[in-house]
Structures are given as structure tokens and as C-alpha cells.
Length: 303
Length: 261
Image (cartoon, rainbow over all chains, first blue to last red; front, side):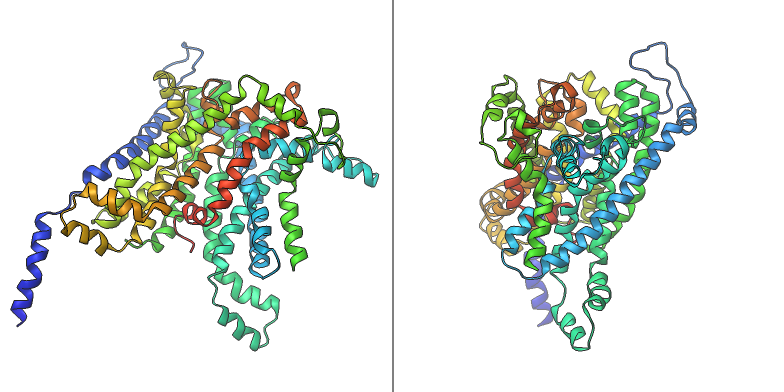
């Protein structure tokens, strides 16, 4: 009996195996182009970072050893750019995660027209960075012509010249506006998978709204929050367009982040060696975050 | 609760609403906060009259659609293999693909710029299509993988028993079944391409420059006209905002690589 079923089941399995599927030709193109896209520029950046190389000045040439890195570390602008990058990432993360959690809790409640209101709330995420930045800079924050300026006049106070006095804060404001809907959307998805009976039970036991939030909702969201933090960090590390069209890194170096510093070195000063050294630093920073993110995603991956 | 919800939504949406309103003002009204004005479409007419506007818009369409289609062409076969014929290395390959998305563009700006200059791809649509396809390929493979995995294997196996080859299997069974998933994957890719503003600002100047770069040209002080900026911005944002609204759910999946459900 056992042996007959065994042969019966192995026969079709064998015939399937004979036509063993060879997926390599189908998967190789994707893997190949991604491998090229990753390895070639990576190796070039690394290589250039050890060269004396200026696009405009052919007399600057030869192996530089660690000089590019030495100049970079000795340059006060580099440390300012690192500080600005961290301030930008840190502030935007705090604003978007706190804002996103509050919005998610709010839109988890039922109220008339909730779905329509949600569409309006997520809209900023779909606005292209150059539009977001210029609209905020000119129509909203402009001290004379912007809405905020008009309000200040109405209230009889001195209008604030946002980009003049608080340039980095202004950039943080714009970027936070763009990314809050992202955090909101993801956290709303996460909050909706919360077990309602658990909340109900807590309420029966006399837990107030705050207790429910801090002991049930927030722990439930912790995983989603960590994913939001990691994904945003990777994107925020190289915020560029918003700075490019509003402040061009200035005034002075007040809004120069690492991405803008590298851009300026490479395409304004044509210093390939120096820019590449900065690029290597950016890649290392991104990889630290990416390692955590990939591990977190791998845990959820089922093949 | 409704007041709070709508209030917050209004605040977040306000800059977009204001941009929309200002786009119907005249330039002299645009710098005043007035809410009452006679709407005019003259700014739209002036933006559209610029000989190059249509070129920018066309570039946006061509490179976004081109990049998306190219990436889908590479991704569909790969995602098919990974979801229906997974092997020992499938898991590792997927995670590795994901990790390529985490390479910061600014870290490879210099070599990409130099390679493009060498190959005459700077400021060319072809170059931008290639960049956008590569930029989104990992996300597209991931999303397709999750959609394909939901198709019961038995359906494809039944087709195979009937003698369908792999190509038939994909074309006649898998693609029709997963069309909604493929469409929303494409939609997400279109949104990401349309709004991309790092490569477009650095690798294009005029010939292949999309709308992101066109809008950036309004940042110079001499080119600053509020009504025209608003009109141009409204036209640049409107189509993608509608796409975005249509694909919110998939967006969460795609951007978190299935880590949040």
C-alpha cells in the first residue's frame, strides 16, 4: 500500500522535475542591470576619492592617497554640512512621526467625510519637491507677499523673514510638510490592523484614553514607526531639490547639507576627488541605516 | 472629531489650495492676500505660450512613462520566477535588490555624471529613461512579487498541464489575472518618476528637462512671478495628485516593501 502510493506520487513529480524550470534567463537581466548600476558607480566613486581630479584643470592629476579625505575632515564646511544633515533628518523625523501618529489616531475615528478629508491630508506627499519648496517660499513664508507676512501685518507684528533669519528651520518646515502624509498613510495602515477587542477589554478595565494610547496603540505601532523612521532617513539623507531652489545652501553654509555639499564640489567647483570623498561618506551613512531596514524587512519576508 | 479632522486636513492642504487660487489671479493681485478677485486664466495662457513649456511637459511624460515601461519589462519576468519558481537564492536576491535602492543618489552623482558625459547621455531623454528605470526597478520587482504571490500556483500549473509554455503561461494566465496589481505598480512608478528632482536637476539642462526642472527655473529672482509660478505648478502637480489619490493603498505597500500591513 505504502509503496504503491509512493510510486504514484513520485512519478508525476519526476516528470515535472525532468522539465526543471530554468529561471535564470528571466531573472538575469534585472540582476545584471542592478549589479552594474550599483557596482560600477560605487567602485568609481571609491577610486575617484583617492585621486587628484578636477574636470576643468587637467594639471590637477595623480594619486592623492587619503588627501581628499584629509581635506574633507579639515574643512569646517564639511562638519557644518554633517550637522545640518543630522539636524534636518532629526527634526523632520520628530515632526513627521509625532504628526503622523496623531493623524493616524484621528483618522482611525469615524467622522463624517473622513475619507474625503484623508485625501486632502495626504495630498502634500504627491507634490513635486520643486513646487513644494517654491510655493512655501514665495506664497506662504515670504515676509512681504506671503500669507504669513499678511497675517503679521494684520496682527500688527513685524513679519518674520523666514529664509533670511531661520533658513534651516524653513527648509525643515517644507520637508516636514512633504513627509508627514507619508508617515500618516503608513501608520494609518498599521493602526487599522489593531485588535479592537483588546481596546474594548482595556476600556472595560477602566483604562482611559491616554492609557489606551500609551499601553496599546503606541506599542502596536512601534514596528511601523521604525519602518517609517528608516525609510525617511534614507530619503532625507539626500534632500536636495528643496535646498537647491530655495537657498542654494545659504546664506553662507546655513542650509548646506551633505548632498548639497557634494553637488557643489562636483558640479560647481568640478572637484571630482573631493566630491567623491564626500560621496563615500554619504554611502557609509546610508548603509548604516539600510542594514537595519533590510533586516527588519527580511523578518517579514515569506517566499 | 469631524471639526478636528477636517481642520487638520485643511491646514495640510492649504498651500496647495492657495497655489490653486493664486494661479487664477493677475500678477498684481497675486502678491496680495485678497480672497476676492475676478478669476482669470491669463497666467495659464502665458505659461502655455512659452514655446518651451510643452517640451518640458512632454519630457516629463516621455521619461516617466518610458522609465516605467522599461522597468516593468525587466521586472515582470524576474518577479514571475521569484514568485512561482523560488530557489535557494531567491530570498537573498530579493533582499539584495532592495538594498540597491538604498544607495544614496548623491553618493554616485559624480560617476554617473561622468559616464553620461562620456556616452553623450547628458540632457537626453534616453539617459533619463535609463536612470528612472534603474531607480525604480527594485521597488517594482518587490511590488510585482507580492502581487504574483497571491495568485494560486494551481492555476498556472493547470495551464502547464495543458501544454502551455512559460511565455503563454505568463501572457495568457498570469498577466490578465494580475493586471490590477501591475497597473498600480506602474502608477506608483509613474508618480516617483514624475516627482523625481535629484537626477532631473543634475543631469538635464534644457532638451530633456522635465517639469521639476522647469519649476526650478522660477527660483531665480528675475523670473519670479507668483501667478505664473502658481499656474505652472498647478499644471505640474494636478495629474500626479489624482494618480496619487488613486493608488494610496499600493503606495504604502510599495514604499515599505511589504514591511507594514
